Image (cartoon, rainbow, N blue to C red; front, side, top):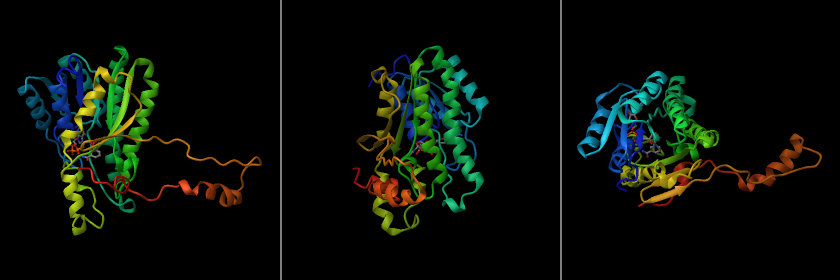
Length: 308
Ligand SMILES: NC(=O)c1ccc[n+]([C@@H]2O[C@H](COP(=O)([O-])OP(=O)(O)OC[C@H]3O[C@@H](n4cnc5c(N)ncnc54)[C@H](O)[C@@H]3O)[C@@H](O)[C@H]2O)c1
């Protein structure tokens, strides 16, 4: 791994702790100059701790690497543009962006407030777009760059009590896909990664039957074994020249497993030469397709085997 990102500048958002911190530390070990971003919020996005990002930057420097820090909120478009300028001024540019910052405001859909909806969409979806948009200016000038956006199986598969988060995370997949198409002519690559990692975030995900449900104990024990250090190798690899042809993909990492996730394509088609009425849709089209309908599964039902 040593030297895989030599000569590159890597920006990781939300890198003051959890998965982002591990990604930033490994980027430093791989020879990158690292911009560590973190606003230092609570899990719900409240409060600010401007020291968090700098602590991780110090860890990278203490290990012999080069790093700067920035406590900008990814939701603040002006501050994000200033952060990209900081990458140029202090580290000499930008080559690999990891959109990782995130918050949660979990609530069953029928009880979710407008504020809970807006806050999560703003940090994940608008935040990812704000930074990608600012980074694209540099990437176009230098005719190259790469991005990895953190998505989630909550969006890809479904999850309980996370409509805001699931919508944002699936929105990020559409964003990434569009960037990979629109920016291909400038050699800009964009991929998504759905991590499974124990962090303060996963510790709060609503359990089936409530967090105190004793039947959940074995599952929660399994989650605790999913180390966040397992996530960075794929991100480091995607930022390197060895992955120069890889774009528009969705990956997942769970322990020692790496998954390439499917992307929606037509499953079945039905056709009537005379066209459709609501009655023929009911009698013919829907029954013909029904065998391939998806049930009300969650991420946990889809990934139902032991990861360890
Ligand atoms: N941990 C998992 O299993 C898991 C699963 C699926 C997806 N993810 C995604 O991976 C990413 C990292 O998750 P984590 O588990 O390490 O979470 P975490 O809560 O440990 O870290 C998230 C970081 O983002 C920062 N942040 C929040 N709002 C910000 C803002 N507006 N601007 C800048 N920084 C901000 C927080 O201060 C925090 O340090 C998130 O995007 C999350 O949705 C994680």
